[in-house]
Length: 177
Image (cartoon, rainbow, N blue to C red; front, side):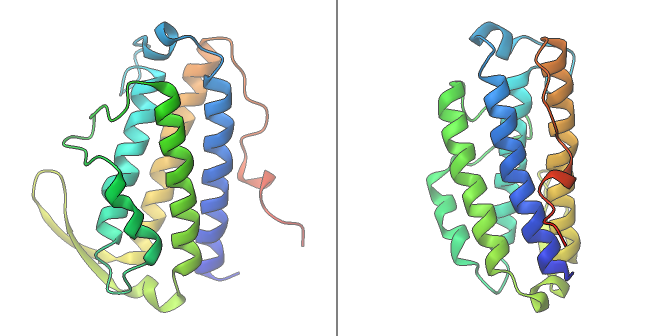
């Protein structure tokens, strides 16, 4: 398995898990979606928005890669987050629709990435304006790890609302040998 294969798998897992989480979260009413449950981003919808914010920030950084991945040209239709806790969508269904399309962009981008792209040192600034330069492959690993981390928080919040997800393991999307 190559690193490209790994990121393609992670993109499919990300897409599947987001669909699973949004389906489960759709059982909550608006009040429960927005109720502060003590998570870092407060509520289910707050954490879902943060995932969207993080993805948009990183994907816009990835768009600066010299390979200029065509899938990332579609990012212009998304709002630009001002902070990590920005609320991009207050309406759950609008957020869900935006998430669905963004996950397709992520899958397409991972299909476009080539092995040689992984070692490219990508320069970027964080939200405070600090400059960094790190290898693109490591940044992609962080991108997917960030998603998994916050989806774990969302599954806990859903569980606290008596909504239990079935399988959430990467193992579910790993193809048979």
